[in-house]
Length: 427
Image (cartoon, rainbow, N blue to C red; front, side, top):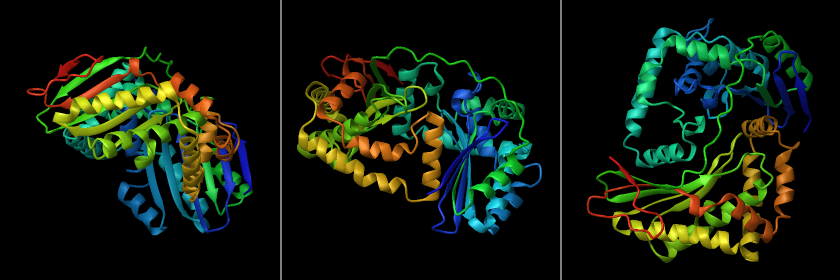
């Protein structure tokens, strides 16, 4: 597949991959306008802004824009994560130029109409209210605050009920004007489109984009590991458990070994050690899993499960014991071989669609990964040794420094796990 990388004079990076097998095309614009770019006093403004982008431009109302996109048989979406925001459109290759025009209009010419701001505010507040009863979400949010403290990664990216209620339309416009500029932004186009056509159309639509944006926010140092226990009191019959520590950046040299580490420990369902121990051997849970979430700055590692309140202490004890056994003793040849086959079998599923390939191109550019890193990782995974897995696990998983969050009913059930204390109860 032919590929092109081009830097525009205004700082926008264009990535094109010709894929003429089907008459469709996908374009995704990544902007350094995620949660990490927000003012500390305005949590949620980045997410708020991203959700307003498709709700009207200076040329089209939200209804007209939606009708025009539907009329093309296209799909338009926006999102906001911690490191970046995205605007994505896909449709027929015959409409590629029109699709790029719409993408540019949405990203460069949002209207932020007061009525749409209030409508979206109501929707976000409703979502946040519903999530107060989602105990998995409650535990996750408490956990990331323990891990990251005041670092932007420690925020709920959608904000809080209080912060969203206080965000004014001017705050959204100010954030947009500061964060949404061409410098540092990346546009990936994949599909049945010629490189020269894509370059010409992008020049026409995005070449005049000159909004400088503000200087990027000064980096906030991630605090030392927040070892300790937090317990959240709720009248429930199950305990919700999450434990872990600061993890890796996406470009960490240990990344490939860590992927295999996680598959074996808790990232592959019924084939993982945690699942075999807690579910199959002890019947403590229906599911337990682990994951590394790499980001631009260090993400985090966690293991999580739900169990009956009366088996809470045993479940926590076994999770910690299994993780310690892994860090102390490493993996077997059979486990490593199986993990490599798992990765090899699942990798093609992430390369099937234009959207997925566009995401790979963006990941490569944004995180500074090697060219076609996905193929390099496929080859590298086969070379990882047991010793490398053990060394990576020991460098990146630290049970003695875990932040642990447990939501449960502690009125009659006491937390009693050797070595972790009783925690600070939050009601």
